[in-house]
Amino acid sequence: MMKKGFILTMMLAMTTVVIAQDNYEPMLKVGKAWENYYLQGDMQDIRRTYHISGDTVVDGEQCYKLHITLSDWHSGKLLMTYQPDIILMEKDRKVWRLNGDQKNLWLDFSLSVGDEAPNNPAFTVTAIDWITVGGRNLRRITLSGTVATMSGQETTVEDYWVEGIGSTSGPWWRYEGGTENSFGALQGCYEDGNRLFNGNDFIPHQRLLEDGKVWTYVHYDANRQASYYQYRLDGDTIINGCSYMKLYQDASYQCALREEGKRVYCVMKDNGEEKLLYDFGAVGGDELTIMDVKGKVEQTSVYNLYGSKCGSQEVAAMQDFNTVKLRWLDGIGSVEELLSPLTEYWGQNYLVYCEVKKQPLYVVPGHTVGIANSVSTRPAANSPIFDLQGRRLSGKPEKGMYIQDGKKRIVR
Image (cartoon, rainbow, N blue to C red):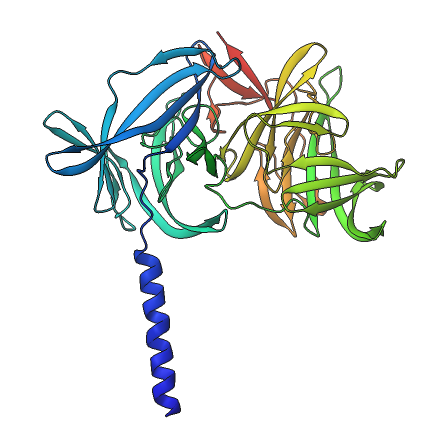
């Protein structure tokens, strides 16, 4: 009797697994919308909005109308409306665009590991797993491909599709310069006005505070001489009944930190007041006060730079009457200065290395780690130049954005 009961339990468990795997989440629904950040060629920040404007029937098949508009990212001014609406069909886990007698495959959620991506055979499926977003289990497809850099070299990058959501580019997919942040980055997916998914949800959130984590930053003085300093988490303490971790800069105690959900709070050593240090749950358009400095989240994305793949936020703040844009990384913090995430150092500071328990999380090319976590120095002059995906270039591009000394620069 016990044996029969055990067999029945196992059969039910296997049936549950199969049902979960076959529980396909459709992408196309009336009331669904996607919002993308797009950096136009003239460096104008553009909001590209897609929404299902209605349904229709084509050749007896249920289809949907996709309406597309372009507007200024900051002012919201309408710049362009695509006409006519695009007709889409979803069937057998595939999303098709109908154009007269032609049917073009946009997304294929039936792919298996090793399959080529539609419209771009340079990418193949390397992994299929599940992620949890807002209490919903969603199937994720990871695609890897080899692309050419601006310097003519080739590198391997990753992109992601999620059932019911689409790709990092929104309701369609094509590789547009990587998943870092600049071109075609999905900001949010909505249903009936409710946000289902953020632009950095393609990668699970990573905690910032972990015992043994070390951050190494470089600082350049007025003569462009480089010096290095480190932050490290070591030990814990109780403040006002709450548990905190201790943060040191080199050998000097700096502050106590605690993490609650996607927020990190700070109590500096000379001030007992708790202040918000990071909010990794903030999304595009959210206004924040970080260590008494006001800022606004510009966009979220997947960060694919220097080998790191994690959620990312670009946050704007006013510095000396200029708006500067700063980068925060899930599990790592600011790439400018850990304890001043809304302060731009104009190329004086940037993160070169982050590790936890000797495991590297973030490494800038050209920097190596030696004994006692010390970082090897290199001359400040002729600093290497990287594109927005962290790939080293042979020289400055003729036009566009690049990274040098950890700072974004523009050639117009």
